[in-house]
Length: 312
Length: 86
Image 1 (cartoon, rainbow over the protein chains, first blue to last red):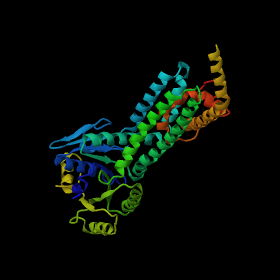
Image 2 (image 1 turned 30 degrees about the vertical axis):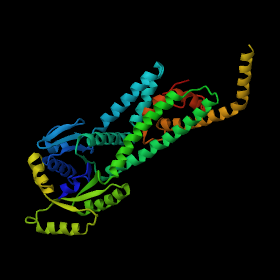
Image 3 (image 1 turned 90 degrees about the vertical axis):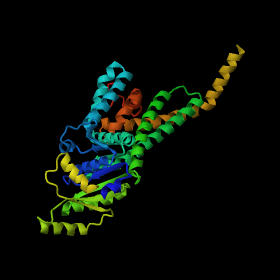
Image 4 (image 1 turned 45 degrees about the horizontal axis):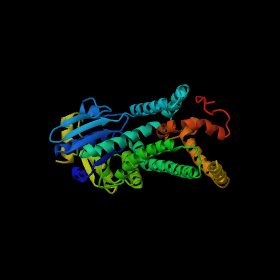
C-alpha cells in the first residue's frame, strides 16, 4: 500500500505532468493518513491552485483546516505575490529607518526593480516552501506538497542547493572583508565597519540556515521523498521517465509512482489492455500503484473513496 | 611634556612602519566590499540577478557606501538614475 511506503516520511512532494491528478492524489493521501490519526498539512505550490476546489471550501495563503477527525488535514495555497510584497515592504521599512529623507524615493524605486526581476517570483515560492517545511515539520506529522507541473517543480527543488552555495560565496566574501578590517584595525586603522558587517553577516546566516535545512531534508530519504503521479498514456509516461532521471540528479528519493485514472476493464477492455502494456514497459525503479478512474472527483466522499484505495 | 613628545615619536615611528601595510589591508577590504556591492546592485545595473529577492534585503546595510563605491569604480556621477547621491 502506498500509504505504508510513506508512513515514516515527514515531507512528500507529489508531482507530475499538468492535469494528471496530483492534487487529488495528494489530498487523498493526506486524508488516508489523517484517518489513521496523523496531523497532515497539504501545501499547494501550483500557481493554478486547485486545493480549494477539490475540498469545496476557500483555501488561501493562511492555513485552513480541511478535515478534522481522528487526525487532521490542514491546507494552504501559497501566494508568492503576497510574499514578495511583504518582503519588500519589510526591506523598505528598514531603508526608511536608516536613510536620510531625500533618498527614500530612490530606495523605493530601487526595490521596485527587484520586484520585477525574473527570479523574484521563484524566490518567493522557494521562501514560502522552505518556511512551510520548517513550521510543518514542527507542528505536523506529515507535510504533503501538491506541486506545480514537473519543470517548475524540479527547478524549485534544485534551488535550495544552489542558494546555499550562493550564500556561502557571499559569506566567504564577508569573512575576507572582516579579516582585513580586523588586521587594519590592529595596525591603528580608524574606519570602523563592524556594525554594517555584523548586519550583513546576520542576514546571510539566517538565509543559509533556511536554505540548508531544506536542502538537507530533501536529500534525506528517511524524511522526504517524491511521489510521481502519471496517467497511462505515452506522453505523460515519457515525461515521468525524464523526471525520474532528474530526481536522481537532485538526490531526492522516488517513493512511488501512481498510475492514475486507469480505464475500467469491464467497460473499456481494449483501452485498459493498452494502458497495461504501456505500464509494463515502465521501469522507474519504484513501486507502481494503480488507481482506477473516479468519476466527478470532488468533495469529501470522492476523496474518501480514493483514500480507501491508497491505504485502508 | 617629555612623555607626550615620546608618545608622538612612537606614533610617528609606528605610522612609518605600519602605514603601508595598513593601507594595503584597507585596500584589500575595500576590494572585497566593492565586489559585494556589485552583487547587491546587479539588477539595478542591468545584470539580471536571479537572486534579486535576497539581495534586496542586503541593500540597506550597504547603501551609505554607495557614493564612495561609484566614485572609486570610475563613475564620477551616480550610475543609477534613481539614486541621486551626488
